Image (cartoon, rainbow, N blue to C red; front, side, top):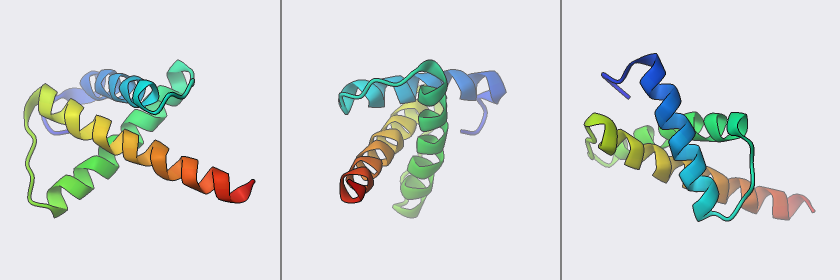
Length: 84
């Protein structure tokens, strides 16, 4: 998330978490969307850089963060099903 600043990271994190929440048909609050979005952004950024993919700008960052957040929610869903 280079070049977007702290406020930009928070906004992108909230948006990415919200989009991932809708895609995965979950219902979280604003704070959880922020946490999922920011953690998803780090996860998505790590995977994208490992694959040699470079996403620049706000839209690219949002796409990578959303993909990471969806992946995070997917993995958490699998872990929760195994515990129950």
